[in-house]
Length: 155
Length: 143
Image (cartoon, rainbow over all chains, first blue to last red; front, side, top):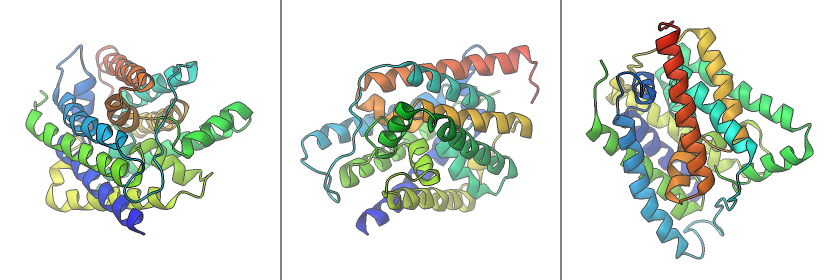
């Protein structure tokens, strides 16, 4: 119950951070990715701010035997590289550059009521199901995605 | 034509970091948006409650923005529906194949000095930049 409330409020703060930082505005995202045009460096500062805080939090977490409200940490431990990681990131980047939305800002922006956002999120859900459908036919991939959903790999 | 907003972006980034830190220290969870969303769409484990609550919080925060900071939804660039559907499919598929997005890899992973996340982040920023270049400069801005 406490975890549910914590998650809810963390979601609110995350959304406010996305909105204040400019991440909910595709013009800022596409401006950031436009290195060869009129580059808008703003979103680099989003990463600097977020990483500065989380870097400290992660160091603190390493000294804790368990998180405050739960029995154990679910932290990724993989350190190897594979084609899937690179290909997936590359495909994600293409979609990010095309639409100007990544998952968090897109979900947050559903609250704007704007139809284009709803269309994007619906397509994103379809992409997730498509991946599940394809990887479900591949036993090793299915095992990977199970690990991901249990929070043990990356994000 | 773009406006540079380092202070607002830094403040927003700090809030994102605070939220992700709370998820880590209180619940032991990685605040990866694509993973949280996918975990609701395709629940394999029974651990969906915290994910659903986080998404509900995102939407509640989104409503607060709509009321108190409507400028957050000045999208500036809105692609055609065809482009948005393509983009959404690629983002959904790619984030699952690559196990994360800007939050999970870009913020949480880099902060943990995870080599996988550093490579993933460099890759999606590079492919995003190439995409924007091709779209804006070669397709002559078919916005």
